[in-house]
Amino acid sequence: MKNKLNGKWVTEVFKDTALSFKLKNKLYSKKSKYQLIEIYQTEKHGNLMALDGCFMVSEKEEFVYHEMLTHIPLFTHPFPENVLIIGGGDGGTAREVLKHKTVKNVDFVEIDEEVYNVSKKYFKNLTKGLEADKRLKFLFGDGIKFVKETENKYDIVLVDSTDPSDISGGLFSFEFFQDVYNILKNDGIMVMQSESPFYDGKIVSIVQDKLKKIFKYVNLYLAFIPIYPSGCWSFSLASKKYDPRTIRNKKSKINNLKYYNFEIHKAAFSLPQFAMDLTK
Amino acid sequence: MKNKLNGKWVTEVFKDTALSFKLKNKLYSKKSKYQLIEIYQTEKHGNLMALDGCFMVSEKEEFVYHEMLTHIPLFTHPFPENVLIIGGGDGGTAREVLKHKTVKNVDFVEIDEEVYNVSKKYFKNLTKGLEADKRLKFLFGDGIKFVKETENKYDIVLVDSTDPSDISGGLFSFEFFQDVYNILKNDGIMVMQSESPFYDGKIVSIVQDKLKKIFKYVNLYLAFIPIYPSGCWSFSLASKKYDPRTIRNKKSKINNLKYYNFEIHKAAFSLPQFAMDLTK
Image (cartoon, each protein chain N blue to C red):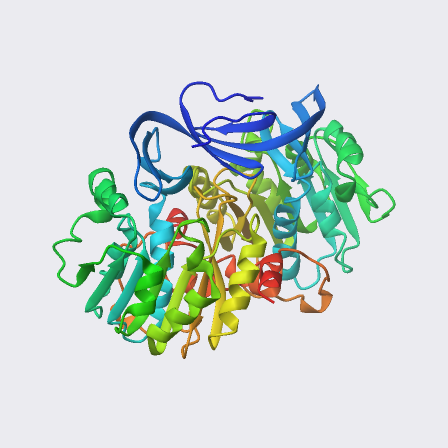
């Protein structure tokens, strides 16, 4: 039994589980105004970002999270033009949104500008081309405040947050969901990450319950994300008009995606029984 | 950053990744004729079995693997009566097979009788009732030899093996697949675990290639298994007559399953793009 981690490893402890990656080097560590940002160079997973000790993004696996957060709602909506991203400071979600040719405007509201600056240096595949794309507006600031005050109306709101914490906890509140509802157009869609149904089933249930009090369609969908606890991650989608199991936007097909395709779009909403039970 | 594992943990190192569970006690450790068998009492995942250092079964998560290995083929087949299990010494696969009322005979060929004996003591939920069920025949021995020599014919063959190793490597060979083909009835189905598409994509491809040379239908399907590397696990299904995306056996619906349902049966075959590419 290889019971010990010999040599250099980086480990995230989550409750009673821990996940480790073999390390080449630690590249960066700095406490921003909001959180501890760390960048590790792993043996085989590329660079890895941790925020307050939680793995957020690895170069090798980031495609799953970013494609699945983005393309499910953007292919559900028949003609997404105006998109709001809350969080997502690493840039990966903005990169995926901008692949949609229908999109005319993306407001990118990340509270911690340092996350974006660090990502520009260490995650070039997530950030390259973003600043050159005039459709993208960098609006660093508090997303909770932004949704309360903006007069813009959006087709899609993507909430790309960390786990619920002091700074992100408000992104899981009923009041925030109502504010998002109010800034969505009459056929708008919101998606947020909503933790692991294996290890955080209560959060899944609470988020689903709150959203169902506000939106017509509320669905949970899942994706395989090896760097997050349990490897099984959930997204909660709330929609005013469109059932997300129907793809309305097939014409804007995007080539060279690594996770999302039209089959997985539908299949991701078919839940294992225990996860389905969390949504009832 | 909680970078160190303080206190007692049990860790599986898999290539450049490692997964750990917080430990209460080590309950058992003994080298059988074939492998090192260890049982750990974890904090929150119940008892955990490791074979040669690889996590095989935890009480909390075992339902995923056993339900998905079993019910996909047994609900694909319209009337499964005669089933062969190769490996599966912990008993969980036999438990699931016996939930099907159509099943009349189950031949259970595990090479390492010690695994079953240990499971009887430490995994009572996997083994209880098995010996009382007269449909189940315990035939401890070498599965590779068994499929070569038996004159029985089966509706379903389930290969519930460890990762490819000295003792299980033969279960991934072309010759073994041919022998399984030969002992299946004209509408028989075989399923085997075929590793992680994230971390062992080559094995997935090789298994699929070999099976396609022999069987009419060969499909890959996936399930979320938090205790296996990457959390994403694949099963390879090979079928002589029935396309496994159609459920032919709806009448034998089983209550109280925790993972499998008829929606997930179909959805599990819809693959993320990178996994679909491994099957081409």
